[in-house]
Image (cartoon, rainbow, N blue to C red; front, top):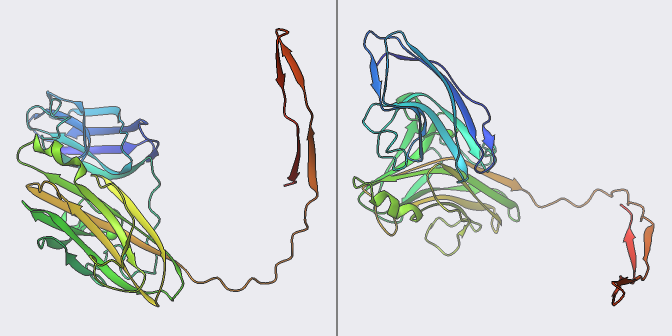
Amino acid sequence: MNLRVGYFLIAENKVNLGAKVWFSFSVTNDGDAGIAYSGLGAFVPGVLHKPSWGGQVLKPGETLVWEDWFATSKAGLYPVHLGICTEPGAHEDAEKLTASWQTLAGPIMVAVGMDFPAPASAALDNGSFEGGLTGWSVYHISAESAAGIEDRAKGATLVLDGQRALRFEQHHKVLHSGAFQQVRVGRGSTLKLTGAAYLLYGSSVPANNRIREISSAFRVGIDPAGGVDPAGSGVKWGSVGGDTAWVSASVQDSAEADVVTVFADARIGLDWPPDIALATLDSLELEVTPIAAPPQDPDPEPEPEPVVTDVWEVDLLVGGTLPLRGIIRRVVAKAK
Ligand SMILES: [Ca+2]
């Protein structure tokens, strides 16, 4: 397919829930044959198909220039692609997401109803998985899944930041896997761990794809005493409702030992294992705030004079029959 993308732009990459995400594109057929398509527009893998045009043929030499929008009321960080669907019925399948789309450009990340995650910090070793599995140990709480590294250089598109991300894949079984890392932080430090995941799952029976929407979750956890058992009672987990699209999770705790352990944990299909389950994890970040040093003798703020407001009693007669009494109070407030 000799399609050339002139441009693919998104007007705003951070919008409120339900707000329109405007995109524009230009596509030219550089080949000698017409290209028939059922859908041409924006899509988010496994989440959203927005065919701007369909049931058309782009003739040789022809250029399509278009502007359109999509909206979603689910918060998340969405990788938006420009794409084409050449299977029949892209418009009809836009709700069910059963037709498969090919990427022409993108992804461009769009944050809906959330902020972009902060850049990875230095507290973790290889928190963004740019160095593959370096620094991390993989675990499986259910059946062992295939653990690997998503790599843009090898065509991967589900990478949140940098070039690589951690990925788990499971077939016909529950996926419950994750990775942990021990970090030296200093006893008593305040810890905040965040991370992001993109959970995908599918069935060869499209109707079943509707059943399992609640059966996935991504969470991050901290064992403040440095234990390495993800199933242990020492791990404090944050919680997040898992869903497709990049979701972020966070948890806060304080270190009970000089070394703590951080966990990133993905679960898909606990109540109904799908035919295929994919969990991609990226952008783990640990903020460490050491125990505060004693205050450096700050200049004491002068105590402000109190402001006294008198509110006096009022008697109102409404229609001559109903007396309403106002407030009787002496309000004492400190000046700002
Ligand atoms: Ca990464």
